[in-house]
Amino acid sequence: MAEVEMVIDSVRQSPANLQWVVVLKDKLAERYLPIYIGSSQAEALRRELTDVSLTRPIGDDPISRDIKRIGSKVRSVKIDKLEDNEFSAKLVLATPSKQYEVDYPLSKALAIAVRAKAPILADEAILNKAGISVSA
Figure 1 (tube, rainbow, N blue to C red):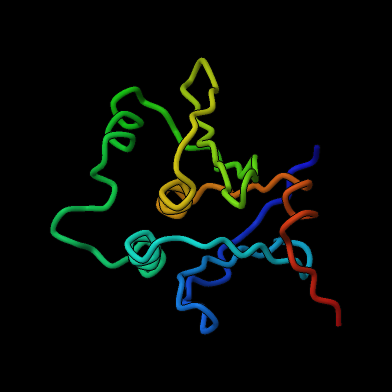
Figure 2: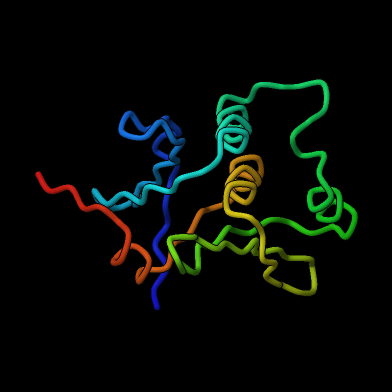
């Protein structure tokens, strides 16, 4: 199915249940995809979006080190599944000779996408199932 490029619209706490939610927006339309995340993931993502530096960089995790070590580049993050109200994501990585996909926790994948300035893609079927359309 088709993939839709999304941008992070906001990371906020829901007033209804006080849970954190990252809101992705379709880059070309008034369609949104709300995704609930944990408070620590929300804080990490907010730091990435505001470019706040810490003593230990958020990127200092095993996958980021592996990406650098093998000379890969993050091409995109794909939100590819929604099962039991849980989203799944893949990091799309590329070396000069090969492209491959790695399953990765969604909130961390979003932070990596922000850091790498890589596109965030959502499967059209997921948007049809969980997205919210806003019409004028």
